[in-house]
Image (tube, one colour):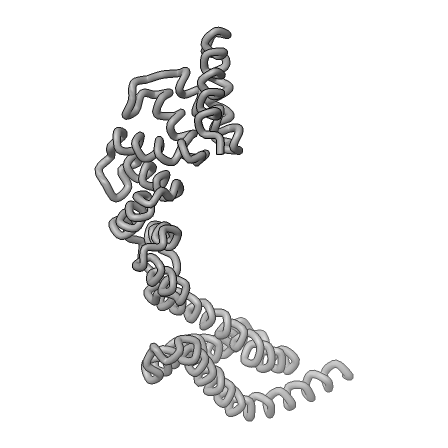
Length: 286
């Protein structure tokens, strides 16, 4: 008896709530729509047309809103066809949970996902202040700035699209001024054929320039080219020398090939290679 009375009471209450909440739901719907549209326009710093954002946001909200508005009605009809009554308590839960929690949260998630994706697309085509400041310094001949410009274009960072031609242009300018990192990256470009035709001879030249300045990646790369005879006559003693120098400088990629060479070379050859390391260090002491 008590249970039946409670269900009837809840049903009446929920029906009244349902009758009025459609208007509250509509207001909430409009607030979310306009709020998102305004936020996207503000985040884009006015670069996107407000009218376009409102229309786009409205379409997304309409699709999501219709789904969550119609979905409960479909469930109720399905329940009735099965001969089951949708209790007042469940109706109240439907009104509050679906229309006031699930729908807004889902809408927020979808909109922020779209807005984030959109904003990343906008930012990727807009050079940052860091890029602009670096470009000014690079054009004035600053070698480090020239190298950094190469990195920006090579990786597609600081708001510019990836462009190997521009990256190589800036790397070359920095390399000509003795920046070992730029020389190394040019060596990698020629070795891998990245933005230029593959040329092991050119790669060797740039790696040698950087390696003689202590560039550990370039030293390991020379070890690799000597080991396999790419761009230079194969020479395991020279490979041992460069791998050793790179390993001592902390280049971990040199450790494994160095171990292999120690197993391959005779004790006399290893002693000769160690002497080459000592000679290089003596000639390049700072």
